[in-house]
Image (tube, rainbow, N blue to C red):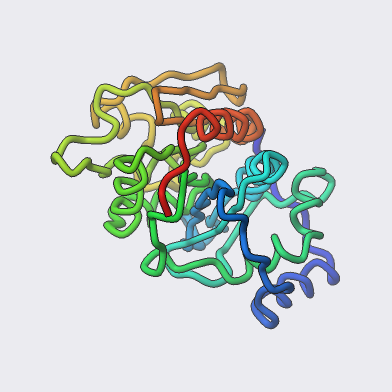
Length: 262
């Protein structure tokens, strides 16, 4: 369930500042030749409504990433603009978020995300479009993002999105010109959940409605309950409560398919 973010302590604020000041805290080790690699995309859009924080929702990054890393996958983080992305929902009482935040390599990758225009899709076995409200602005008509999604999918990879991340699938088309999601089973943060959190007047459109209007077969759990929908190599999660199970589903799907040639 979404709750308001905790106030940043002086030490925490200093740590945030250090992300941009220092860049990656550790040099990355070369990945094993046969390591499976996931591209995790987060939003660069920082506000919603009357100036409230947008960006990505922190546990929708940290919970799946923890699952991927425990499975031995390599993880890269990218965003439309690159660099340090805006984020909301951080809670360091959450073990997965605390582990991510105190890991120098993870924190370094977050402080220096890849710019989408610099991403080589052929390197990845899967892509995750991370939620938070930011994607409702900078994922929807993003040709670079949609091109990466299509390239990974048509190379036999896994396409996944959680919460508001499916906004990036609305305009994703295959090389045939067909919609990636038309006729496919999906889920996302629901209209009811937006209303329950009083976010419905802050977002530019209703994501559930837009997915249905795009021809997707929308599935949902009761409000704020875990729901992960798997339709072949397309995997979606409903909300923050789904983040861990979503990561498990993506991991299983990657393991079930041959690694993408890099």
